[in-house]
Amino acid sequence: MTGGYTEMYCAWFESLPPEIGRELALSLMRLAPGGMLESAILTADPLDGFVPRLKRLASDPLRDAGTALTLATLTDFTFFERGDPDTWDKNEEILELLDEAQQALYSEDDAVAGDLSEWIAQNKLRHPLRARQWMKEQKSWRELRAGDLAPEAIHRALNRPTE
Image 1 (cartoon, rainbow, N blue to C red):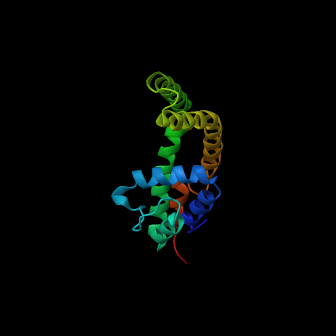
Image 2: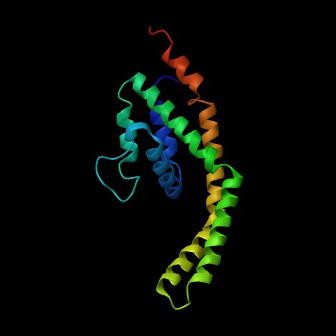
Image 3: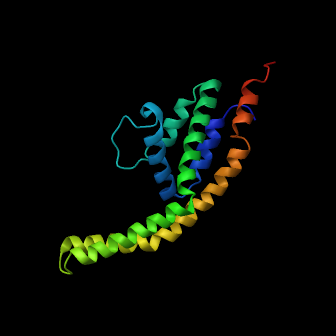
């Protein structure tokens, strides 16, 4: 495969469930050097215009390869963090601690306590599903990363003699 590495990444990214895509986009924007993935327009949703911004970075074959390699490395880093079962265990422990603290610090009729209690309950229910979703997407990422988006594959394509 020659060229279109950023397109391949974008196709994979667009296949993610929106919640996972949103979290990944936020992570990539936070990790990217020089704010290269941030939007010039303030938007509440990090997915707004994210894929078109990625595609604009790949304006020629060399930039396409560089963009894809950068995105892949940052995605690897994100999955390294999110793919570790200890991370999910620690998150679950934090939710439990928040729940205990909320119960100890707030009275039942406190409006803040109600909102916090609802948020904690929702996150405790969603936590196992989110962990499974991240693990599933990590598997699809590893397959893509081992194939067309492997650094060696991109390097070979860039160094292939032109005819």
